Structure formats: C-alpha cells, structure tokens
Image (cartoon, rainbow, N blue to C red; front, side, top):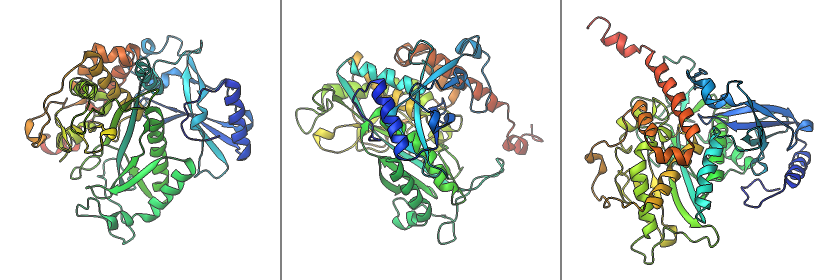
Length: 461
C-alpha cells in the first residue's frame, strides 16, 4: 500500500485489510494514533499493533479541541463541547500510515479523523474543518492545489524560558552572526542534523523538495511539492515532529515560533495555491493568453484581499505571531498584490500559463497547517462566489503603503467573530470554539508581567 495521498475510495473492509497487511509486513509492534489539535500538535494514543484495527473504537475526549496551549479551558468550555465532556471516535486514515523512523522498536504512526457517536465528522477537528472547505470546492467541480514553504530556526537548547534564544554552533564550532541568505556553506554547517532530517523524511515518504538557508541566523526553509491541500497539511504536521526530533538527536532545538528572537527575522509558512477542474485537471487560473490570468483567478485573488484580514487569527494564531508581522523586515503589512513582488502580502510568481498561482505570505510557521490552508482557501472561494475584483497590481514596495492587517491577536479575533461568511464556510461551532480558546490564551498572556515592565516602569511611573 502506498503511503502517498490517494483519491481512490476504499471500503472499510479494504482499508482494514490494507492497514493490517502494512503493519504485519513491517513487523510493527506499536501504533501511534495521531490527532492534530487546535495548535497543530499531535494528540492521541499509543496502541499495541496486535490490538489495532480500523474499527478498534479508539476514543479521545472532544475537549482536546477546546483547550488552550497552556492546558486551560475557556469559561464556556462545556457549551463549546458538551455538558458530559463526551468522547469522539477516531478513524485511521490509511493514506497517512508511516513508520516512526526515530523509534527504537518498529513503530507506525497514523493520522486519525474524529467522528461523533453517530459517525459524522466532528465539527471541532481541524482536519474536518479543512475537509469542509474542500467539499465546498468539490461542489463546484474544483480542487485546490497547494505548496507550502515552511521556515524555522535551529537554536541552542533553552531550558530557562526567561533566557533569550541563541543560534547553535555548527560544524565549525561557531554560531552564525551575519545574514547568509541562500548560503550553501551556511546550510552545510548543519549537515549532520539535516542529513538525519532527510533520512527521516525519506523513511516517511514526505514530499520535501528544496532546502535553503533563510536570512536569519540558523534559519532554514523547506519547500513541499504541489499537491492536494489535505496531504500538504498532513505533511507539514508530520514534518514539524520530524524536524524537532532530528534536531534533538543532535542536542539542538528546532522551533517554528513565528518570531523567536528579537533581532532576527520571523518565520513564515507561505502557501502557493491554484485551483484545477476536478475532472479535466485544467488550472482554472490560467487565462487564454500568456499575459493575463483568468477572471476566476482575479475573483480568487480579490477574496484573499477582502477576507484575509478577517482570517488572520488562523494565519497568526498566537500572541507572538504579531511580532513577526509588526517588526519583520519583509513580513506582509497589508493586502496588496503584485507580479513577482515579495513586498506584497499576495505575490503572483512569474511562471508558465499552466502554472498560474498566487502565493499568500500571511501565515507564520506557527500556524496550524490545516486551519491556515482551510482559511486561505475559504477566502479565495468567497471571492469566486461573490465575483469580487482585486485592486490593481503593485509594482512599488508594499512596505511603504501602511499597515492594513490586525496588529494583535485580539484585533484578529474580533475581525473573525464579525465575519459571517467565513464562519459559515468554516463552521460556526468551530469558529466560536476557536475564538473562545484563543481569547483565553490572550487573556493568560496579559496576566504575565514582563521583565521590560519591571525594568522601565517599576520605579519610573
């Protein structure tokens, strides 16, 4: 059975047989049953392989989707979930089964979908939110194609959260100090870590394409091959686990925090996106001539412009996310677009007519890949539905055009809560739960008195 994402429909019996055969052929002893949570981290259970089956009945409390990153609950927790704090049923997606290459014993990992007791997709599960948007495209005989670009930093181990992060030493024994964008030698400094990362990715059949050194000290970027949105979200989810593990094996942290260091640039997750006809596979963004995309492309683009600010709580989901947007050297500040203009939040790369696409630069590397992709695709679909028209393309620097995006998580959550079209497309119950959880996180953050306040305000106000 191929580990790649498949579009073939299999019966439960076929899926059960294929999974059991896959596990048996590899002498698997344990299975990690994974569920991506609101943050994008892995929740789940570890089950002995001889007890694992498609209808095993694995369950998790639905409250995992109404829990903050600090493990707290919003005040309306039992309204968001259920008064009885019920369980969800987990169903393995056979297309996601992979080895866990860093495990001591033969271990498999499988991403699971979350279902209600009556077998319906659970509305709070991020994977189901993305699927809900993809189904809306399918109703129009359309299928999105995406390719994420994910940035991250390697940093020294940091066991004291009050101590600032520092770049790690490479093979030379020295940490980076100068900006080394696209430097091959700078990448080679971390060959042992990256070689292990590639070994893990090969074992898991992750579609990692190119690797580059970004502008920050020990900041790297990996690109994924274009494919369907669900498989790309799955791969980003799995890659984050993989990269962290490879770095830890060498005594280093890999962090996907959007702005981990004060004097270094932030880390993004740019999402290249196009839309094809489901049956013919034709890119509907491609125009009839080489010099102009199709009307649907411009509707989609205008949807990203109109609804992007309202969806920023998914692209920038944490209080730290807005440090990247506010203080990043090339981070997007507004919704301008342009042809091959990297200062814009929306860039249209120069490519062949068949490869016409738009690159959304809003999301940070800390975004949940399922929700970031669901949100950007939802914005584009709303543009298509409403036949919106974009602004003219920008040829100058968009950095000089001011700040149009929310400046804090609080502002972003208010904008999302007021957007009925986005709520309807993503799911009203899910959006309510997401806003409630994130507002609780924002409140918790403001309870913390920072060292800056103690240094400059304690004796001066």
